[in-house]
Length: 473
Ligand SMILES: Cc1cc2nc3c(=O)[nH]c(=O)nc-3n(C[C@H](O)[C@H](O)[C@H](O)COP(=O)(O)OP(=O)(O)OC[C@H]3O[C@@H](n4cnc5c(N)ncnc54)[C@H](O)[C@@H]3O)c2cc1C
Image (tube, rainbow, N blue to C red):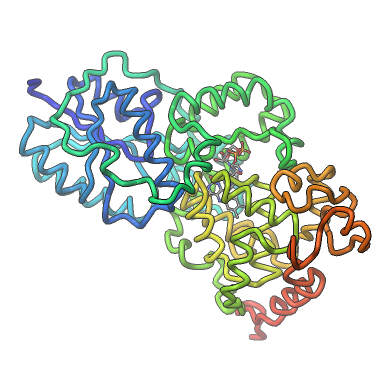
């Protein structure tokens, strides 16, 4: 047995290439590659667990079946390994959720006391959140200012690293198998979901290649049209660390510096901004970033929430989006904005209830991106869409799905309705509905709210809010 073992603890870095922690661990000698399902962590969504299952399988195969998987309390598991094997170093790549930061600080301290060297690396962010600050050392709250600073003044994102050339992966007697982690749900719902995807590092690389070769050229415009395939779909891979943002960054910049690539990089930077805000304002998971929204009169309405979740709102573009989510574990960004706006504005249901549903169903469910995006749509986040800007889902559909292709794909009940009425079937003459075999309220729901009226109600609720800073002194 090697006298100096290093543990590389996989977390949100389920890849071998461009993995700094693994790379430097391999340079020190034999490595124990370990993944822990941390039982104390806040629960993952159901879709995320499915993705994790398949992703671990792929990683294990790439590691020649030498990935050790465990379930339990990380400090305890690491301490046990140190006691049993000559472990001198423990490496990991940094994670940025508030509970992960606290946990890792504690573990680092405890392991140091046991005489083990702990090293952490950056594998998932282009810029460390503490490295981009205003002159007064406070964090930015406006995206463009953040991005401008990061882009021009902060350190250039590091170049990607190759796979460790001489990874000597130490085989431990395996106790737990990936199947024993019980990450797959009992129901068959996930089978259809995962059939649309190939988790894992290799799939991430081919998606990136395909995106750069055949989609990037039209990204800036095409990214808004949900029926077309002009986005990268890299979000779950980025979340689980099956690909690094550094690799995406360098492969994109080395290609060209067109408007399209600049726009793509700026979207990648929105992800950085979410992580940045979550790091500097960890309470935003449960609290409005702008406290003035704390008194907003959100409505509790279980049955309306359920109809939204099930894609039964009676508003086709929203139903298409919610069904895409349920059937594929993904929803196009434009439709995420439309359906989220409908929930928080037309229905006035709290953004946290929407975020919780997305958390459960999205393969890319990501605490930073999900929280900040919901707060952005609700108007209470940083640099947010103003509350009074309320998406009209009919106009949004007409503009971004002009042929109705996306709606037809997911709302089969309306397949025979002419495109003229596909965005607002309630406006179709009775004869048209009849010819299309649509009976509103039976074969397809009537709209659950009147869009104009609910918009007005949302605006008045917003107007009635007395913001502290608006009060006369
Ligand atoms: C209500 C709501 C909830 C969301 N929840 C999540 C979530 O849980 N996880 C998640 O990764 N994204 C979330 N997003 C952001 C965005 O919708 C997705 O990142 C994007 O649709 C992923 O598809 P893509 O990889 O094809 O994106 P592309 O357009 O190809 O963009 C490339 C990458 O840039 C990042 N990115 C793109 N758009 C955004 C954005 N608006 N904000 C932050 N990062 C972005 C993502 O990492 C994405 O993979 C949410 C957006 C909304 C409106």
